[in-house]
Image (cartoon, rainbow, N blue to C red; front, side, top):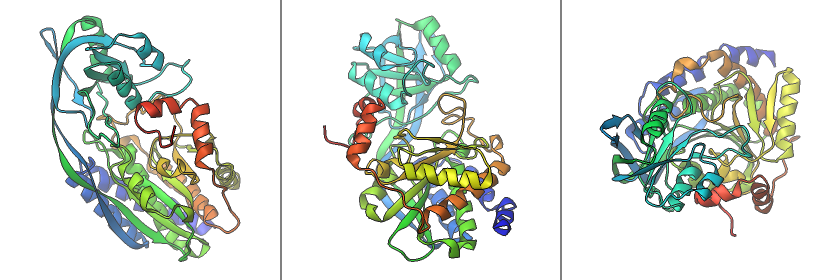
Length: 436
C-alpha cells in the first residue's frame, strides 16, 4: 500500500490540471471557456489512464453578463449582476431585511420595493438560508428588485445564480454588492428610491458533461464527480477547479490500483452546476440509477486540510469514511444531515447513496467563493495530495464486494427534508422534487 501512497503524495497531475483550469479564465456555463475546460478535463482523464473519455452535450439557457449599476441619490454604487437575472431596470424604495430570514420576509411590506439582504445567517438561525430562497421570497412578496450583500469584508461583490428549472431566467433584476457598498446603501438610502439596472445577453447555449471510466466491466459502478464550470468573475480555483483537479488526481491514482477495484468507477465532471445543477440533473435523468452504488462528489475540497463528508443519512457512507479515517489515523468530519446543493443532489433525492465532499470551514457561507477572490494562491498542493490519498482508498472501499451501502427511499429523503426544515425553502425556489 505504501508505494501508491508515495506516488500520489509526489504527484503533480491534479495540481497541474488545476493550474490549467484557472488559467482558462471565464468558465461560465455555456461559454467557450467552459467547453475548453471540459475538453482539457477529458484529455487529462485519458492521459491518467481512464477509458472511454468523452463529452456528452446538452442544451441550456444561455446568459452572458453585460453592464449593471445601482444609482442612489446622486451616487453610483458598484455592483455585479447575479447570473440569470433578467435584463431590466427598476426604480423603487430600498428595504433592508438584514439576514433575510423567512420571518423577516413574512413581516415586511415588499410590494413595489427593492430588497437588500446579507449573504450569511446569524448564529441563532435554525438552518442556512440559501441565496435563491431569499431571492424568491422577495419575488413572492412583490419586490421589483434584489440586492445581495456580501457579509465577507474586502470590497467583494458576490455572484450566484437565480432562476428555476422551469423558468431559468429570474423574475426581477438582481445584483450583488460588497459588504461595504451594502452598508453604505442601507445607511444612506434605506427607504429612498434607488435604481437597479442589469444588462445581459440571453439566448440558447450548450454545455457538456465529461465522462471516463476505470475498473472491471460490471453493471454496478461508483461515481466520482465534480463540476467543471465556474462563475465568470473569477478563476474558480476552490469552486470548483479543485474538485475537478481531485477527480483527475483520483483517476491517476486508481489507474495504478485498477486491480483492486471490484466495480466500475465512473469519473464525471459536470457542466452548468452553477446555474441550477443542470449537468447532473441531465445525467440523473438518463442514467441507470439502480446500477450506481455510491457517489463521491467533490465540490469545495482543498480549501482547508480536513475533509468534511455530508452523508445524507446513509449509514453505510458514514461507516466507509470512518473506516478510512481509522486506517490512516487521520481526522475527518461527517455530517449526517441532508445537503441539497451541488451535483450529488439529483441522485440523492432519488435515494442513491451520495457524499458531498468538501473541506471543513468555520465560516458561514462561501468565504472567498463566488467572488473575485476565488484564486489559486489560496490553495495548497499538500492539501490536494493528502486528501487524494484518503479519497482514493475510500473509492476502492466503495467499489469493493465487502462494502454495501443501503439505499434510502425518496419518501425517507422527503421526510428528512421536512424534519430538517429544508422543504419550505426548496418549495419557494422551485427545487422540491416530490409530490405534495
